Image 1 (cartoon, rainbow, N blue to C red):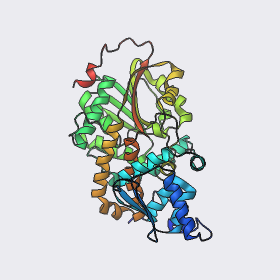
Image 2 (tube, rainbow, N blue to C red; image 1 turned 120 degrees about the vertical axis):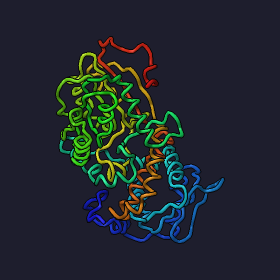
Image 3 (spheres, helix red, strand yellow; image 1 turned 90 degrees about the vertical axis):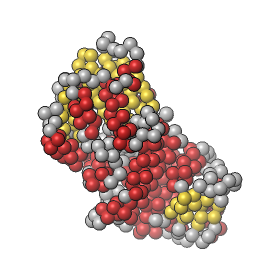
Image 4 (cartoon, helix red, strand yellow; image 1 turned 45 degrees about the horizontal axis):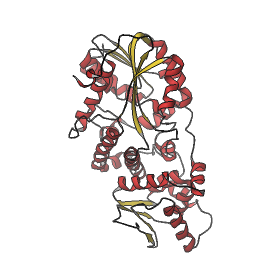
Length: 420
């Protein structure tokens, strides 16, 4: 078992923090009143909520999808006082458990929370936290927190190419492996890659897309990434598999990308850039993109501006922010880039997360061999909560293709997007 918990770091033990959430006992009547107010504020959710003493609130109609049990007064106070962070921490510690359909429970909970009004909505706003700044040093720290917890952990539940971004399922019966290959091909066709094209990639993950562009499209790719674990893995594969002359993985910040390229691509990195740095990212694309170059940004987003789930930002993805399409234009507009195509793959990401969660659950014992129970529960909540957020439309997945405004070497149709 790992000696430290990469989710909760050096925080004092979660159980003791929860135990301090309330400094004096509340009466049983007050506890039940608080629980009723929380559930009533969510409308009529289709789940049961139970207290440690056997008291419960059941759905007004229909069968419950799940039962959430709050096992002690401290966990209840944690939930009430700290909202999303309180629930996530109490779930991780075991102070709150959910029996039944966890994703279905979270879908109902997220829908209910989105509809709250009055004082409860005000409290929720006060509980929100702005993402931590993504300065060069901050970005390295944030990426290290999430991605450098061990390749062996991610290998348990990702596909063989270690793709940790939304897959593309043109046919619903496709396997995760096939859908991840389809995603990479879809991006390459959007960029209209040709043999010999020079490609700059900002944020390469474990190197799968760069590998795909080089081996299947004959491109020469340079990928920048600040995760030492990922760059080491990708570089080792390039050397041992014999394509290191076509792909270069650079352990450096995207802000330091240099050279001229026929294509620029960023998949799953914009969420870590920070809204205040969008013009900087636009400047990077502007200085390195050839006259007739093409660029694509693939990112989790929202339909309207809203902060990341506070617990996920604090415990899982520090510095994360999913932008709206309007906010993404802060990358393009200052440099007069022209949008060529926008596609939303929201339901594809919900399906991807369904596959990841099933694999994660199947490998749960191995997760616990690497980390502790708290970590295991926290990541299960993160994966299930992300799937639920895409299912209800709280999160979107945008692919935005763009080029310079004076580039006339453009396709007359979209037919190339769907032809291998």
